Image 1: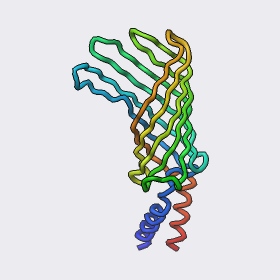
Image 2: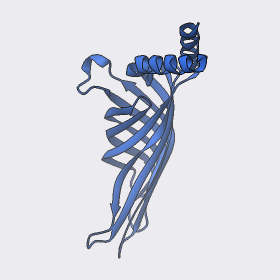
Image 3: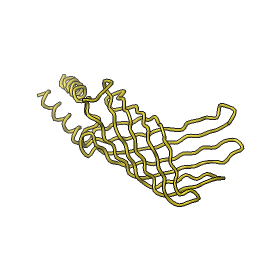
Image 4: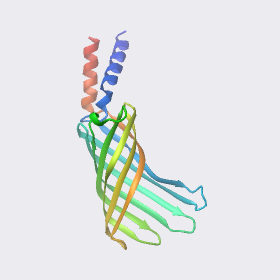
Length: 196
C-alpha cells in the first residue's frame, strides 16, 4: 500500500511542476535539430541533410548554456558536393510564461559561436569562425519532450576562397529535458513528506 501512495504522490508532484520544470535551474537539455532535408525524389536528384546535436545545462531558470555539433552534406547528380561542419558553444533564453501563445509552449532565442566550415568540391570554401542567432518556438509534447521550430541567421567568417558566407536557416527539432539533481531531490523530498 505504501508503494502505491508513493507512486500517486510522485505523479501528482510531476504534474504540478511540469509547467516550468523543463527550463528550471539545474536541468539538462539534450536533443538536436534537422534542416535542409531533400531526398532527391524530383528530377534534379539532390540529396541533402543537416543535423545539429545539442546539449545544454540550465544555469538559472530560463537560461541554458552548452555546446553543439553541426554536420551537413548536399550532393546533386552532375554537380559538386557541399559539406559543412561546426562545433562550439550555444546559449538559450526562454521567454516567460506571460507571453505563452499556446498552452505548454515557449518562445526562445538561441545564439551560437564556434569553429566551422562550408566546403564545396568545385566552388568557394570558407573555414573559420561560425556565429548564429535567431528565434525559436518550443511546444512541449510531454513534460520532458519538446518539439521546436528554429529560424537562425548563420555567418561564417574566415579563410578560404570566400572569406564570408551567410545564410538564413530554418530547422525542426526535438529536445529532451532531463531533471537535474536538485529537481529530482525536490520530488523525492515532496514524495517522502506526502507519504508520511
